[in-house]
Image 1 (spheres, rainbow, N blue to C red):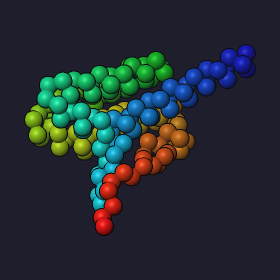
Image 2 (image 1 turned 90 degrees about the horizontal axis):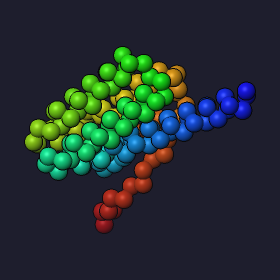
Image 3 (image 1 turned 90 degrees about the vertical axis):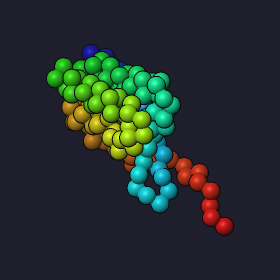
Image 4 (image 1 turned 180 degrees about the vertical axis):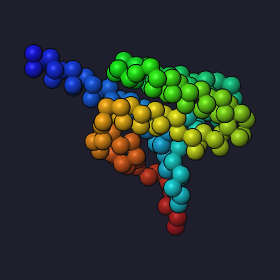
Length: 141
């Protein structure tokens, strides 16, 4: 059934691309001008006391669930859950957690584990290089 294999592969690639886009949005969507520092929704939404870190953890858990649906083995899923838990625990500490969220990219780490498991190295999954975000910072006069 070559047609079935094609559809399975297409679904697999669609899922990987979706996870890649969400990981990029959550961890590296915005570049701070003049620095090499990138941050995303995890860092920004995490600033909201109480619910911010819980909300971003739910998105991270969605990535882990997609990994499960893709067939990642339980040992790797546990490591991925550890990344999410570590990010949630330290990220929920006021002020220190906000700085931590800028530098600890749990979604990116988890995406890396998924891509490594499947041997994917294609540029379309490189969440930092695939398509640069538009720079909207005001220009100095």
